[in-house]
Image (cartoon, rainbow, N blue to C red):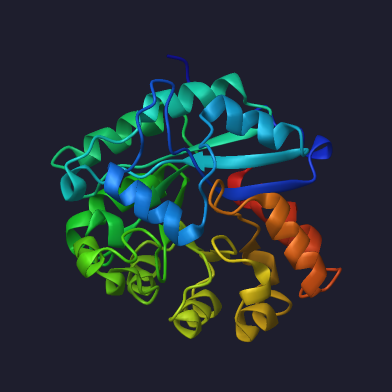
Length: 293
């Protein structure tokens, strides 16, 4: 195993997708239990094959894009082993011209801090959290040490916010609680860790105003636009992206459930974003956040 080092030439790419899931490994192991995988495919109407990390790299390289890649470790909630973080890092190292690895460490694991520190040493550029899927409240003081380690390493913490398709339509939503992904919980995290750069992923339905309030007040927070076609974006989100927080809004697709091709086509058709802010949304803001040069 080698330490990841980015080799991305910014002038050779047209966009950076900050929200790309690796859902299957080289051995066919899925990031989700079978029942959740089936329900998610039905919810997103995504029945196509899930590419492994090499397939993801080729998908983005052929489009002159870079991608932030990750999976979700929800070991304690699902009793299902995640895709290997080391496999994701090794895959990103093979494709360092287009892939940027984030790790995921279930914050409820007893060894969460030790594993976080190990993955920092391996060169990951950030960490993915999903409060609803991982069953934790982000502002709980129990997770402060993990956040502090990420902050001290100068890395990014990406949190799912708003509704999720994971568990949708299953009895009781498979026990998952949407309220844990209210972005207002991240206000306390951003206040306590002012040097921790936090991405609030997705239009935060039904808490978009809360996300915009946090982003306006805490300038160590960012919003990615993944998971929804731009034609469904709330009007206030578009207004803020074009003005007050234009330098902290990020292109993200939610691949493979939503492809970058569809996102870009729908955004162009809807004509939502001002021409002067598009370069920032599509690439420049992410490059600055991730320390790419």
